[in-house]
Image (cartoon, rainbow, N blue to C red; front, top):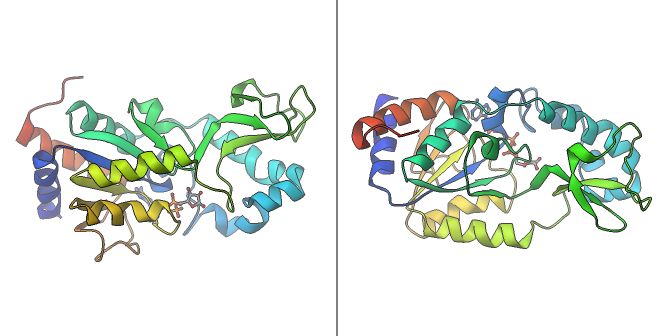
Length: 253
Ligand code: APR
């Protein structure tokens, strides 16, 4: 394990530009359950019945009641953890340029990263399905479900449901960030959902080293990833940063 941490720190020290790709695993230590695996949300509810755009169109009240409202409650009280703060320290060292996240919880921005691409959108914003008006989720009155805009239309979170396209700007910027980095840090994602899982492939095709941090192996492990470090995001980031600070000097807060 020490050798893996040393090698990852050396690769990052030598890199001019690091891009991170994150998934639900980085927010588990913030109290937000993941989607897959033990205790995952999709173990309790069927994503095709609650997280597909057709399901929302068919019965928005049901999707609001079962999925959106409970997610909004959990996300509302979550705070960043050491996995998020580790990425902020990497940015302050001048190494990390961009975080591509599949998470809709806003915790990378709350921790302090400045260039965060929300690949699957955000729960922090709502959009009226009739008039298109956008607003902050905190401004939406959720006493009545589904919440409605002044025009009478139903609000939806500004996130990507299954069956929807990735916002083109997020996809283009992510592809550019993947293609231009010399290290990609892939942390806390099962790499089961496309096109997010393609970003490490694109990075590798363009010469980047792929460092993967996850307690479990994924489809990237041993093929796309050059280095797989088993463990939780917070603990491994702390270990890498401790080594990195010895190589590059301390981070100035
Ligand atoms: N630190 C880092 N990773 C962890 C931790 C931890 N403490 N605990 C678990 N993990 C890993 C799991 O091993 C798993 O590989 O986090 C990953 C979580 O996987 P998913 O729940 O599938 O999350 P994600 O990859 O982000 O899912 C992608 O699927 O349903 C959609 O839109 C949803 O954005 C989501 C997408």
